Length: 380
Image (cartoon, rainbow, N blue to C red; front, side, top):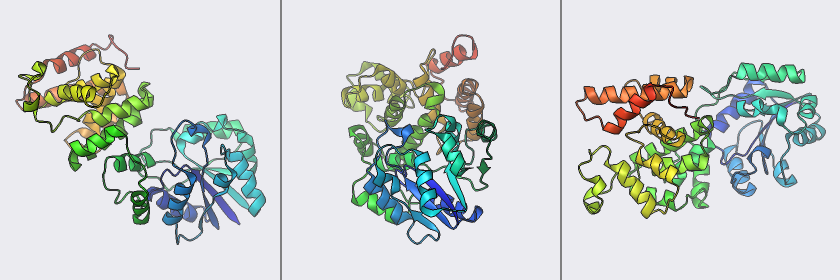
């Protein structure tokens, strides 16, 4: 019997998990694939994860009727921190398979040497890498390092995961966006019926303040900011809050704020960033000046920006729903070298505004001049 263990938080399960699971069964010619939700993942002990009961129920709905795929509650029943070596040993004792595979993603494989007793996993199972398409990890180098260190042979699957994440599901739901195409319909119904993944008061404010199209953009900015936050050394909570509120004033009537003299004579395209600062501070009680300034300068930029300000500027420009000519090239520049890519973004914006006969705000010109000098700054 050939068995594989597909573990994770599954917070929540989504369509890509299902497609990956079916592809894994086929490629490895499995007799059984065990979907194993963690109780408490060692690497996620500080993260808020939904109860095991809800995650297990959604998994059962998602994989109902899937041949050779079984949802296991072993780690949830066991309780406590879910150490993979214990799970592997348990499954080997329970089934005595002729071949046991343990599935891991690129990020987890990179940290595999730091796991609890990784050698015991190697003794009892073969590691299998499931990577995302267009992922940011150099997986071949990671595999070589693990192979050398543990004298093993990691299998790299041909099946790839697409760009859907549980984080995306949670953000979309908190913003009141449809989950159609992201999770199976029974899972979406379960989330809504049980009122899961509710956002805080800032998310609720944005749900009421912005139309669907702008909330979709906001979700993209949040996800893009979270993707690059670690690379820039930015706190993820600050990145999420700044991205969430960056367009909070986009549809406000400026006439209602005539008492704010700093809004007078501002171009229509940028007034919302200054008004957003005010609303976040006075209506939503945001007191972190770093977050407030990320909102305040997300459209124009300025010289000597903080890493958080740069992150939100770039995320706003390049989030997935942006479709302008050249956006893919800019994304590639950012992925290749964030600091140089940021300068290219500034150059492209200034060039676009000039060609469109639009006013280039002085702060943007100052930012471009400052960052083109290069030696004056480091983002991280």
